[in-house]
Amino acid sequence: MASPLPGLDRSRLHGLPQLGASAPLDPARAGIIHLGLGAFHRAHAAVHTARALAAEEGDWGIIGFANRSRSVVDPMARQDGLYSVLELSDAGTRADVVDVHRGFGVMAEDPEAVVREIADPHRRILTLTVSEGGYFVSARTGRLDVDHPALRADLEDPAHPRTVIALLARGLARRALGGEPFAVLPCDNVSSAGTTARAMVIEFLELTRAPQDVLDYVRDQVAFPNAMVDRIVPATSPGTSEQVGELLGRRDEAPVRAERFSMWVMEDLFPAGRPAWEHGGAIMSVQPGDVEKYEQVKLRILNGPHSLIAYLGALDGRVTIPASFEQDWIAEATLTLIRDENLPTIDLPSGFDVDGYIEDLTHRWHNHDLGHRTRQVGSDGSMRLPQRIPSPALFHLTSGRIPAMLALTAAAWFACVIPPRGFEPGEQARAMTDPDQARLQEIVTGAAPTTPAQHARLLLESGCLSEELAAHESFVELVGALLTTIVTSGPRAATTEALAASLKENR
Ligand code: CS2
Image 1: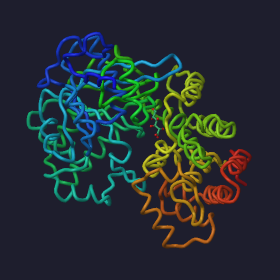
Image 2: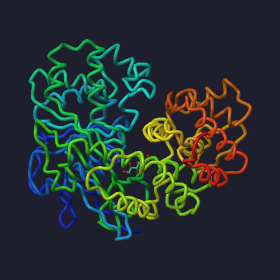
Image 3: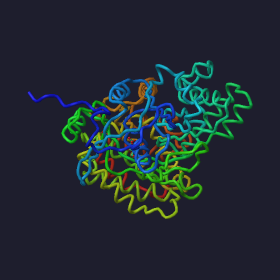
Image 4: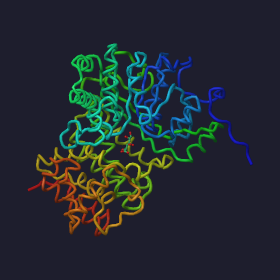
């Protein structure tokens, strides 16, 4: 039997391709806190930060907190904070060791540690990847979701915060005592994520009757830059460690895999300083308002259509995004959604090459080596689709046109995750998870609809995408008709029907 590979640690880094500062980073002076230490952060912001540090030194080590699980923090701590990023593209496969993390914790186990870190004047920026649900925005009101049980518990007992919004509020309140400026930089696919996070934190502070000087501090001294983040990062699989082992000759227990493409555009609002991210591949200096335009590009050209590929593909039995996107009918549906329905709703950033972005994207979706799964992209639709469907759909509906590919996205989501009684969506769809699945299922079970069209109506009228959208009868009817076709004749027939109806005038 071959002898096991040596593990990854600082004494064995020599000769490996590395990303990070050449000078040691002092954990006590690490300038960044990250909440949500998962694969995306480690393949995206951490890589850009490590590259920035390689170009220009600074106290920008990262203290990383996982949400609940120890599955990443334990091996990373054992490996001196090191891990590798396996890059898979048709330009080849490579692995680099990233060296930028200097401390670890688990939010659910020790929330007070997060509060302490935020109050520490050496920390100057907090980055966030907590997914759409972590912002606690009500899809109904656009304000803080005060009906959410976890948030309600924090509102009742703000001294023992559990949710990210309450942790931020508590941490910033303590930091206000010293008054050092700070920046909170969200890195999730949420529209105007910085502005949104700021509004939720301030609303939380107001609802919990925070002192005026704390509110003044957060309003005046804490920046919440908006940002657009883009890199496809599938979940790490057991094969990732094997591939890294072959490339680096080391045993890495916490690798991540990603495509080659990576983009990060952010507002340059960092009152306490920042890494030289412009030297680490990020775009910093854009016109005012442009970052939000980049966010819309990302949500409507990539994320929304990505969901459509995942749901149609899963219903067609496809395991991965590339296997799904290489079906002609799925590609046609996706490109019609991008070009005809979503693109006209976007105000493009100045100088942005949208055709180039779309061309790159179709290439990225063909990446078989990456093996991004339809079940992963299709999960958490109840959190993701409210960011992806209602605004562009309303843009057309209010002008009397039918956004049929957006309706198809909703119908295919229902078919996969909250299927009508008696419809079997298949193994890939069954494997999709969603925190709201049981509640949505209950809505339809309780009302016992007799047709797929009634099933779709009940779900839409529950406001699961948006109450405003559910008030458009033509949209509700079309989602019902498309769900009926999926059930009776399959996703391909429903796609043909949607393509024929796309942007027809609604008379
Ligand atoms: C995907 C994103 O799962 C999803 O919803 O659309 O995770 C997507 O891969 C990234 O945003 C790409 O930047």
